Length: 302
Image: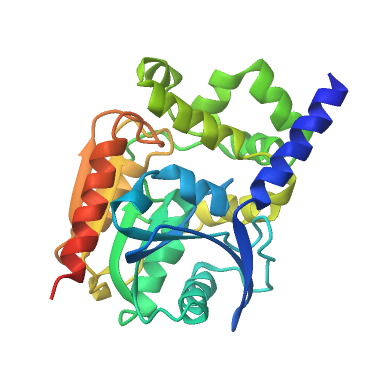
């Protein structure tokens, strides 16, 4: 068992570096992975992710005339964590990636905990963001807006951070209580995954397995956990980019209400809500991909 543990973690580390490169940018070294040609889309991953999660969350975009540029955020994989790892600083780093790639503008997709910096990029650099996509966003909502799911307790968060800080603990959880990982770490009902198509089940399995090695993502995960408890209002009315916001009512992280609120505050934003699918939007991959491609093509039209 111990030998299998070490082998699995070693393979996960090798896989996490596959296909990516580290760009030298004005904001420091940032890891990116690219696929496809066409309309540029900067993909900003969620908690527990990296460039690899960005590629896996909405697969198939590269085959739809989209140049997917997936970054590893501060503290994830080969992107170091600077002294200032706040969403505004991360947003500036997103633009530094565009500069390093010679791109004057790009659409930006923020998933889950990647949404705060994606939003900040659209607010701080409106001339650089051609369109904005927020998938199951971890976002601010006022107290008057009811939660769409009960928030996790501080005790649960502490347990989660410990689990996601240890390769051994997380690997063990995957083998002993995989459904519990799906429900509590990925905030998605495992029974929906069991009923999904083979393609969707494979996508979920890939997202789960790609969290390893968590030791290479632990600093970013800790930042994301703190951020989720300290979100404040943003000047959403300043977002000029055409915007798509997507969530599911049964998302265990309760993003549905915040997503609705965010879309309502951004001028002209489109909100797409599903009754089920959880945080991973299980069963809605094609619909989400179609919405994203339509938005990118519309925003690129003269």
